[in-house]
Length: 152
Length: 152
DNA sequence: ATATATTAGTTGCGCCTGAAACTATATTTT
DNA sequence: AAAATATAGTTTCAGGCGCAACTAATATAT
Image (cartoon, rainbow over all chains, first blue to last red):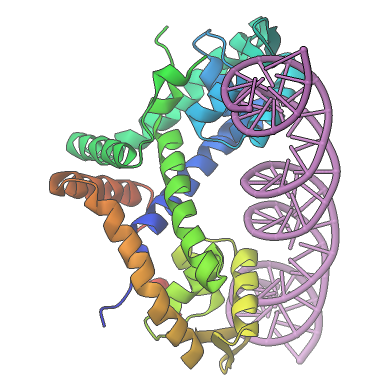
């Protein structure tokens, strides 16, 4: 029987990579801005300036709706996003960054982009391309690609 | 200012992929064997037949020591692994699968290998190679590679 | 029109996790 | 050799998470 090697097993390797990379990044913005991962996802999603419903953020980020709900509440409490009841559906809310939220995101953005850039800089160009190709293929296989039509 | 797109951001993409893939896999073995992810990692690590200390499993899997401690306790309680005090260091324990543990792993192994195979089968050969290359490069950049000298 | 089913978002609850403190043993320093 | 420091593994505790139940509103079926 061939030996099973956890450290060669794709799900484990992806998990370990994601944990390692996320932890570094999350520590970065937690320390300076007291933002956690779900909150970061909401801010980043809203960063384009468009309004999104919680439902659309859930679909786009594949994060549980209770988690998004709590992140939205925390960000609202801090005045970083605002929430306007949808006129056509009183259950739903159009969310968007406030001026303070945009200001915070402008500080956040270079931080996280630098983090990503520094990480990718440790790969050769062709390794970087291979990574992008492999990840894209997996996303396609799992139907995780961006679906613009999900946004409000 | 260039628009920031969370869905193109490497840490997010890795996280989402890992979550999606792990969840499917973990559900698979949770349902049939009542094993959770940390327990799976311990079993898989011990599957070669060698003995490992908890410390070595922690280093190899990059899982928190309290998590490994609890997984080891649960597996011991179920008689799937045994724990022998190290003669040269009374703080440490040499862990290994029992006969029942080996039996369980023999059932588990084809399940998880099929899962991985089915996943990779949705990629073309060259996409699969790109993925392996990209992941390997990231692991190297983060120094996550297997370190055989950490065992025992 | 009314009843039924579905949907957007929230909340209570139990579980898991990691940080930090702790115990027992080993190692290093003085 | 005693004291100080480090290490293997456990445990307590607080925080975060997902599930499932819930509320309020909307859509569908009869």
